[in-house]
Length: 208
Image (cartoon, rainbow, N blue to C red; front, side, top):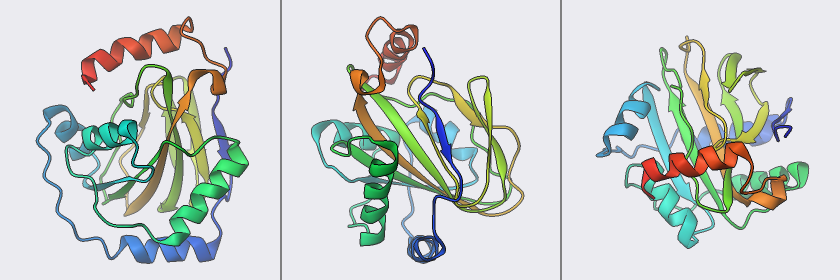
């Protein structure tokens, strides 16, 4: 079937962008990873990754603990982030009852390695990534290449498609990676879908 990928150019307005950059610049937590797979993946970004469980459900709790390597940020996010989630939900027509956020702050030389995101039986891990700060770059989603500029948002089925960046970044880059656990049927998927079956096999590797 056709993918549920979508890019929205210039999604972020200047005021929202500046407020969030100011918030990110206040984060000074030191994250220690114990999981070998995650340590290898995160090491490639040449920076820091901060995970927030927004919905605080059983599933988002398990997923954020796994994807963060065990450390989920214990702080309340500023209202501007919650307003942004509402905007994403309206534009993309997706539910927000199982939502989390990963803030990725990368230094020069960082790159995103090839990977699938974890999920659960019955759900797609649907990501809406927003380029908050940094140069334009090419982002690969399976055999599709998306050129992303600052303030663009690109949404895709992260647990169904392998994704990565092509080249190391030449300057600091901040990415907001909003995750939504969405039921298969909401995205037009079924358990018979080849990508869903592949995702289910991959989940056994993650051992969530």
